[in-house]
Amino acid sequence: MADIQAYPFVRHLRGTPTTYIRHARGSRLVREGVAQSFWFRPLSAVLSEAPVDDRELPLTFHARTRDFQDVVVQATVTYRIADPARAVERIDFGIDPRSGGWRSAPLEQLGSLIIELAQQYALELVASIDLATALVDAPARLRERVETGLAADERLAEIGIAVVSVRVGPMRPEPDIEKALGMPARELVQQEADRATFERRALAVESERAIAENELHNQIQLAKREEQLIAQRGQNEQRRVEDAAAASRVDAAARADSVRVVGAADADAERARLAAYRDLQPPILLGLALKELAANMPQIERLTLAPDVLADALAHVAGKR
Image (cartoon, rainbow, N blue to C red; front, side):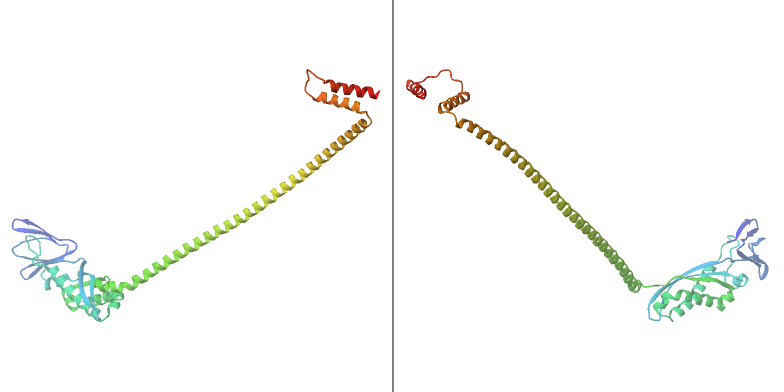
């Protein structure tokens, strides 16, 4: 928007580098161009201002495909006023000489025209394809069709409008249709997820089985080693018992030999002693017996001999003499 300063009887207008200013007085053109700055009288001046910079115009509309499915089309048209002198002659870009604002809404009028033309070309293309094609290939084809159609449109050329570019976003069907179309993909993703889960579980089971087999193998090895240890301990114990028995037999044999030798010696001594006593007289043997008895008897303080015992003994002695 131009900057207008008010002074007594006159005004001063200062434009911008992206605005086209046209100054007329009556039916005579006084000046025109971009980045204008000049004095004028507000009562006689006719001013027009048109932007010459690039402007973006977003548009969203519904379209129906060949198979009668509704889709939402989103696009952005970038345009500029390439011939502002022609544009101000066809569209009211007049501004108030006091405030500098537009008397009408020229950009809205121009935007409505561009939107209607773009929708017309887009609807024609969408109506000729089915839903699947529209969702996959339509954005590129739609951008090319709208851009070509707007560039060749005679109405825009007469106004001096040039289309810089057209951008088309992905089309969106109705929510239930979109959900139905996405179901196979979701099912495929779910199947892949389930397959990955099953593979992971199978790998885990295989790992657990390998671990269990390893543990079982270790237990078997330990059991074998324990069996070998028990067998070795049994052999060692058997060998110890055999060695102890052999030692006992040797010791018993030695003791038996010793006892046999001692017994033989005692028997020989006893035979010799008996042989010595064999030729002695009974009184002598009796005396020796009494001596032996006296040696082995406890101490006797008194001895009482009956007369008959003493008489028999004396008579026996006397008869021997």
